[in-house]
Length: 266
Image (cartoon, rainbow, N blue to C red; front, side, top):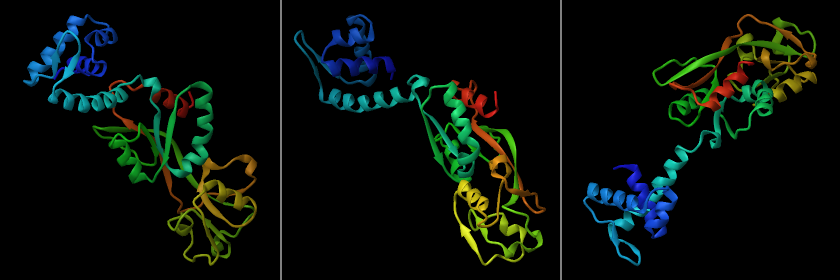
């Protein structure tokens, strides 16, 4: 089925007029009539009853009009101008609240583009980029396949933070402020602290440590010099890498080029 013929049929049915359809398509009225005739021949069905006074749809024509109008709206959204499409971003919680926030400010000082940002864990982010839910994701996984590829952005190192100097051999003596039950603090000590706070906000964790509520392990890139914290590297803490992952485009969309320039500091 030729989409041009279907478009001519949709507009003719919508306006109940060959002339108005021709005007919208910017082609001759005879061309509209010819395209609909070719559509009818390809389907083997009469869709429009032609008369000098009005355009009437057959029963099959009415069914096709209702179905194709929805199709036309959906395809119009898919292929609308790129500048009108929001950029769909998937990102890990900690990256959004710290590293990505200032980059958003830089992005919007330079570009005008709608953006939808979704926080998720790594498995959901990977599934989302492969299923086309996201245009780009930011996570710790390096994915290289026929479908997607990852660009390394920076190394992420974890450090132990506290308000003042602490005894690194007696971490269980301090209150632990952890992101989850899988927090890296549990890797550092055989003995667990009896005093813990579990909170899924990196910024809140840092604020509590600044106020001498306890100790925590966080990525080094989330810290500022003005935090005035005691920062210590510890054996046993993992190192990871942060990647930006997108679909493998032959020609990357303008929106992703803009985003890539910002995250790479260009």
